[in-house]
Length: 462
Image 1 (spheres, rainbow, N blue to C red):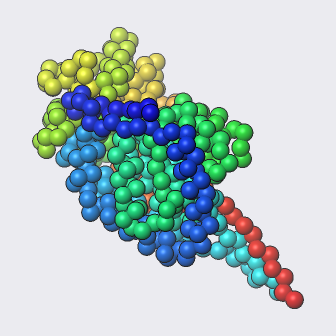
Image 2 (cartoon, rainbow, N blue to C red; image 1 turned 60 degrees about the vertical axis):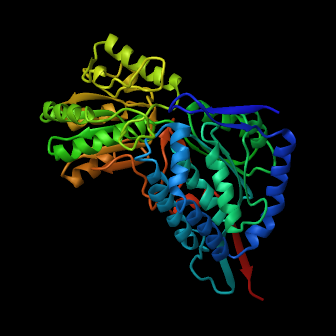
Image 3 (tube, one colour; image 1 turned 180 degrees about the vertical axis):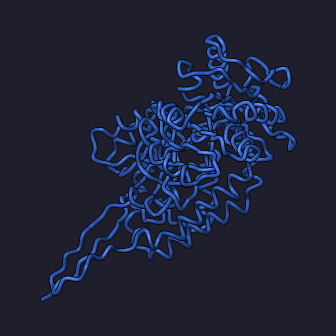
């Protein structure tokens, strides 16, 4: 039986080894999910809410152990990892459970004598959730929890870099008392996923990952009339205006760029700074980046861990080298971070200036601890550069003038406009993107829409 190994970025050791699901096991999972649908959707909404909440509480109560596993699987510092579960995961799960009655409530048009009319949301059937390694709890919860609460059954395929997340979900839902087949996970490869998407027992695919991965999902679903939710790449910009609170802005844009070693779809990857504050901003920015401590992520003192694998670090090294060859200037001396070594996933953070959009570091997703900073002379120039991207997930504006931010935000091609904040998902707001960032909506009331279908009831009185 085929196996896969999780090579830990911490020290290159094999942390987990698992067997991939056989065709027979995949078939059995699909059949169990199909058989469980009717009973699960028939349960009152409040019962589904309570059972899912019980599983969420089970997981958050074990955050320390889950965090240690996650650090070894993907390399985020243990000083940060627990908060993915106790803050982000819990906040999103709690909100989506709480808001379900409102999101799923009947829509009733104006009264019409002699008729009862309403629109009701019904579950789709079985939702296949394909989740990545970089924030495995945060990305999966966006679909897993509302799909289940809405009355769907769920099959989770987690990245093979973080397989234990899927297994812990199963433990939690089993402990909560979910009926057999309502939630399942499968460790599978790409070909098996393609076959599952083509199976008539899958009714929706929620995918978070790369643009090529999104294309593969759409292609696999192209012969079927099912929905696909796609959260793909990002190259998120920030614009620092001349009236920004510089100390606050520097602190938050550094964190927005370098938290999780920059391995976030909504990390700040390019910054445009008004010429009036450019020099002061860059000076303070570089000094703060130098304070990061790169090292073994199991050490509580470490604030910057390795990238997930050496090949990912090599991609970032190539972007930096290409930018420098085209005239960019690197402001961080790698010697300040002796733990960084060629041929390993340990990479020093880097700040680049004298950059432009002919360099891939300003146009292609980096997913690493590097950011490019450009000087701009006006809002118009900043807007043009911010929109000069094939991606559109988030954009952040840094200013004391929120009316100005709202005006500029209306002209930015993006799914979310931030002012004086970045790299955060508010579960009450729709999480979505434009252009190659994908399509569909998770979180908020609207997050239930793609996980349900509408049925109209037109009842004539006799």
